[in-house]
Image (tube, rainbow, N blue to C red):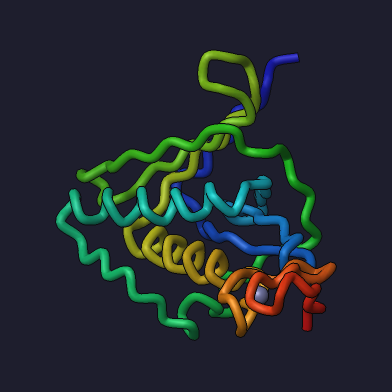
Length: 173
Ligand SMILES: [Zn+2]
C-alpha cells in the first residue's frame, strides 16, 4: 500500500498538547485543515527542538521571535487538542522551512527516516501560528514533573531518591 501523504496547506490549527500524569506524559502534535485533523505522537525533546527551530526560522525571516511565554496565550482554549485523539503515527523526523513569499513556515513530519517509505504530513502555517506553537511547546515542556524542593531535581510519580535527604525516598505530591 502506498504510504499516505497528507498536505495541510494552509492549516487551520497547529498545536501541541499532552495527555497523562506528570512524568508519564505523552506529547501530541496536531494539525488540521477544516475537518481534516491529523494527530501525531512526538517526544518532549522533539517539542523543545521544534520550538527552537521555529524561533531560529522566524528570526531568519526577520520576524519577532520573542521567546517569552505568556501563559494565557500558551494555554488559550483555541490551542487545545481536538478530541478524540487518534494518533496516525509517531514522528521520527521533522523538517522545517520558510516560504518567505507567502510568509509561512512549512513543517513536514515523517513516520520513517526520509529515505524510507512512511506516512508524511506537510503543514503550512502562518508566522503567527508557528510562533504560538513554539511558545506552547516550551510551556508544556517546562510543565513537566514536579521539582523536589530539597535538591531541585524532578520527582517521578513513584517517588524520588533525594540526595539531599540521605537517599531517603521522598514521595511525589
Ligand atoms: Zn530531592
